[in-house]
Image 1 (tube, one colour):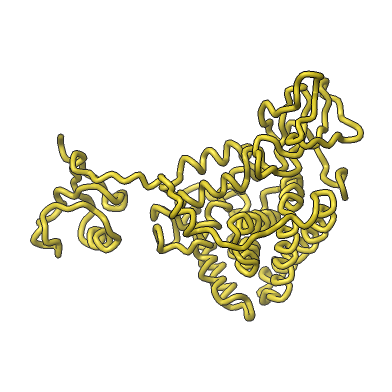
Image 2 (image 1 turned 180 degrees about the vertical axis):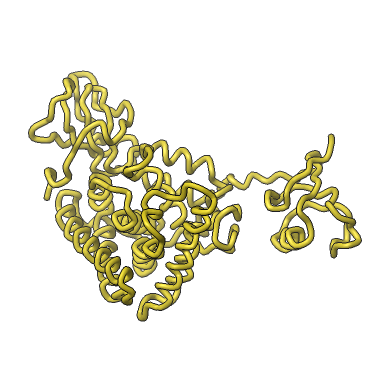
Length: 398
């Protein structure tokens, strides 16, 4: 088989380097041919070569996407959380925490825009309220966030990302203080976008020059957080990681694998999921199921494989807030997960089989197998796009 020329910045671990674009004697490599296994080897190649020639027949392949029980154990904690309130009871409290956090984020925005320091105490309080609500019942906050109309702006997204990171931290059974750090990270990791010119942060880059400018928001965030007293000391460093990727393809430093803290890897997955699913003025958005499918395809590549599998379990087959079609022809919204039977969540029917609004909404727990016909229990046929029906969360339990 012929050798294949590969640019050094496109190399992956496991390939067999058979030839360089310069003499072996001009390099520190002892053997004239080796399997690429370490960052140290890769760093040397990046310094000395632009491209190398690999031998596909000698490639040492490893299924980096394969997840073992040991992989899962490394990322999970041991704190056990029990549901302390139902969705109906927790939703008003979640709404209060959400509203106050949104106010805090707006205050932070104004402070940054006029060059003032961030109020770290207010940030702590906001993250604490979100954490407390999520610990009591994660489904309430998840439902509230999903049903809120999102504009796609940085500030409105910040609260949603904070909530999702907090929910994921609870699912991973991390200690409450770690969960609160994740909540603060979600709120503040993108504050640097407020330093970008014009509407670049809202619309995204349109060309290479804008992409380069857009990426500077990470450094802006790190500087702003570093200059803010009383914040957790690790926060600026963690904020620098949410655009790094497991395979080294991210920015600003191109870190890979274990060089990225778990909190940074979590932030990257959640930020991507939110970007894919959040409605925005420009461009389309995906259903949660389709977004999870895209992220799953990138496991072991852009995203940590074990964290991807855990995130999918956390979000669920039918995520809270999903709009679904039932075998009765009715349309419902998922309001709570069932961790034992993921295909049988709690739902709220909002449209009858003819498409008319259901008044009042009909609540069902599919795990109890309620009947839609004498001999047939309710079941979910498929997910629908959220825009299929218009539902105001304030009509629920608020």
